[in-house]
Length: 420
Ligand code: SAJ
Image (cartoon, rainbow, N blue to C red; front, side, top):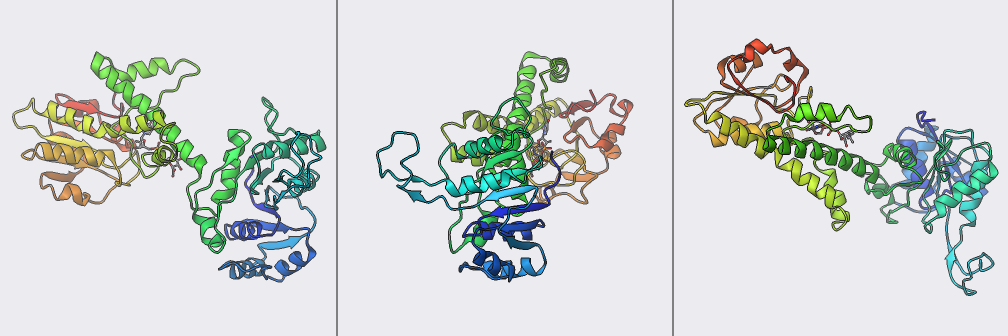
């Protein structure tokens, strides 16, 4: 069902279909362009473009020469189908039910439906079908219904509760003629699947050539951010009530439908801490939970640093070890890392205190810590041995080897619940 997408058919080799076909080909897929017009098929197979669009002709001739793109009139078997046929407005379809006055313009979906019929006849199961043509709400569902009527042997996703054999989604084109080749690769895309799995499958297809953020991805990352925020909020609540959040979490996670993520010192990386803001920007009045989650997660480094500083002030001349600087376990990426932020805050709040930092995945301190003057990089063993307060900021696997006896007599601030 979810085999790799290696062969795509693009139906309609017009202003959107041909650039999409060539982009998929450049993205590594074998692409077959389908068009009812034999003249267009012939020209594409000669490596020519039937219309002018900057950068398109060189891309088409290249893809055809490399054998990645070819055109034909018949519908082929493929892993993915992109329908990019015209949906002109017309006043000629008043015979359709709906009681509209004669002459009312409406989208002529006959090309879309003809493409869906042709696709229906060659389906084997496991394919994803994406409607790119701009079309009225409900069209994707109609495509699914039409295919189901023609292929009673296949489950289509408009019927709930049965895992579909074929995924169907809508991903309307949003490119500006004259800039199609640039925008097709860089513009954000909106993907509407008949089910979330349909959207995810369609996103896989577009990821092969689209560098723009896909809304699906934004939703995935915002979902994770909200769930981490829940865990972090639970930590704050437990701290206020004098409870052990790790114990509470473990007990709650015994419930078959509960899976609380891990609280921590904050959310870093370039995706989860950033992507939710795109959703907030797009729908500020609706995205209240997503915005609140960002605020909860963003306060964690300052909160964690405050706690380390408060604990350290119990000592007359405290020595502090910060274990881990990266944004998450077992990577060396220090950018947007809560651990770096926390170390910098602690070092700035206690300028006379030496902070020993151990980060086995990074060769040296980042500039912002180096310039503070009281932060020194060393190995974990040494940092622990020399310090009174041990702050575990990243749950690197190698820190698991640290023995309880090494921590005896020290104040341990384990932000990751690793040594619990
Ligand atoms: N974190 C917690 N508690 C948890 C899980 C994570 O505090 O229970 C923290 C991590 O320590 C880290 C941050 O969240 O600071 C993000 O880490 P992550 O492992 O959750 O995610 P990333 O940023 O490494 O990768 C995410 C992934 N997206 C999702 O899981 C929905 C990844 O699949 C995406 O490919 C990637 O973003 C991306 O490029 O968008």
